[in-house]
Image: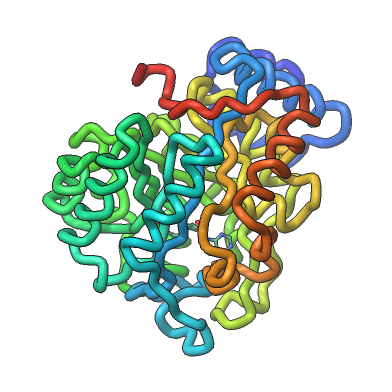
Length: 348
Ligand code: SAH
């Protein structure tokens, strides 16, 4: 097989076979990789020109009832120093963000039963009342369709729920008491309700094969989410997967490029996990077709407690610093920041 020919056809048709995708993932390097990156970047440019959207991330609780074997805030990690932000603290983060020009707030947390539907709806409606021109994105895990509907009715616009891996066996091996089917059901409910929906996966999960990564790509092509979060798995020593190797920057970038080519209009973040592995990781992602960044607005005195993986970057930095730092990084890739809500192009 000729890699450049496969890439050309993927670029033209936004489709590829299992075999071709596997061939690229296994064999690409050097000049061919650069070629792939350029095609992915051109595809991003076609739909979003040289802009990158910014979202403000608020990590509002690290309590979690789940026990995912990769995640530092899993319930069995008794060493995790738990915290929750109050409604007022969350609103304070939004105020800081709004003053810095943000118009999307992403509320992310563990699955924390303290935050009942009533409290979540109260948070959403208060944000919407104070900042009606802003979008609210939730990333709070699996809930019933009724709950998702309540949040939507309260004003939530988007929901991020990574599928983590589209292979059932691999999914089961890292998610005690959870199933991929229920994750998919959640994604379908969210879509039905009318959310802009984000799925996504980790690269380099212990035991993950090239075929599994191809399954992720084809799953996403079929699901057609509006947003796709892709990051390397990074081990956390207080978890069962703590002793395994993590995912690589290179493999993650390849998956970003392929995702951009398969789903040309998707909103694709350049993730903090990539910036953690490589000081220029986020810039490399922006060169590979990513078009979203999510700097942190969480209070600095709590930030390092939201430790999904180790050595997470920027935990000591003020929101204003993150805003400026990330903008400089975006500019260094030839892109400019777009501080608008940044909806999916089909949603406008
Ligand atoms: N509880 C929410 C938010 C999860 S945290 C939910 O279930 O959706 C956000 C994402 O961080 C997860 O979806 C997972 O893909 C990622 N993550 C967690 N632990 C990680 C690790 N050790 N390395 C890399 N990414 C991780």
